[in-house]
Image 1 (tube, rainbow, N blue to C red):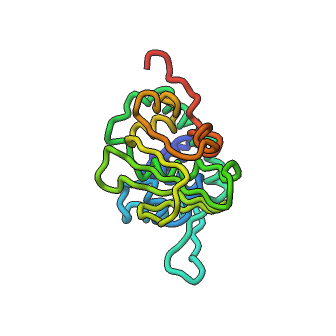
Image 2 (cartoon, helix red, strand yellow):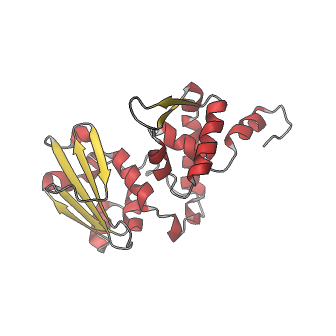
Image 3 (tube, rainbow, N blue to C red):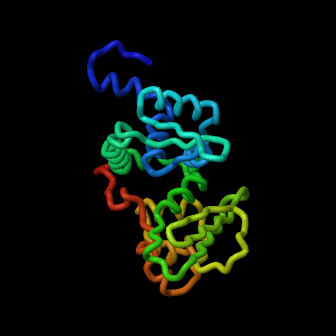
Amino acid sequence: MEYGQFCPIAKATEILGEKWTILIVRELIMGGRRFNELQRGLSLISPTLLSKRLDSLEQHGLVLKKKISGQKGYEYFPTESCQELLPIIRSVGEWGMRWARSNLSEDDYDVELLMLYLKRSIVPQKLVGNETVIRFKFTDINEFPDWWLVVRGDELDLCVNDPGKDVDVWFTSSVKAMADIWMGQNSYRKAIGEGALTVVGNKALTRNITAWMANSIFADLPPANGI
């Protein structure tokens, strides 16, 4: 897409304005490296379109594509020009929290994206012991209602199959209830009091969940007046 203008906003939009591109940049900046990981954060994008967008970003110097040593496939790394988009991505998110949150629909509550974000929100240094197993059970979905997060030091594994380990903390809720808490639109204490969330586990972990599983960076932003 070309706008035929010398304006730097127009030239930037020619690169970033295609559907999905800004969200692919979001995933790259947040640490997504492999194709399937990027796709997990963009669940509705087709593999063909994701490949096309990554190729375009590589051509424009925003992505470095590297063969995985000894394996099939590639890893995708954000370049300096891509990293410089971080404050812009954050500003768009802040604007969305203030002005667009009323546009959320039930279909927007994607369990894969939620679990990817919860995984990225874990603060391993705040957990006790060599390994912590966290289980999530979502009561409002039939496909993949059960998820496990296994934390070993700085290594985090997210899976939908029982790893066969003792669970340290159990969360039971709807996808929306958990997403609303993570986004700061509800609190763990209030959700538990309302019956929207059940948390079972050692009190050393359950008394202050946000110490080891942080909320969204946008969680403290209030909605704009009248929205």
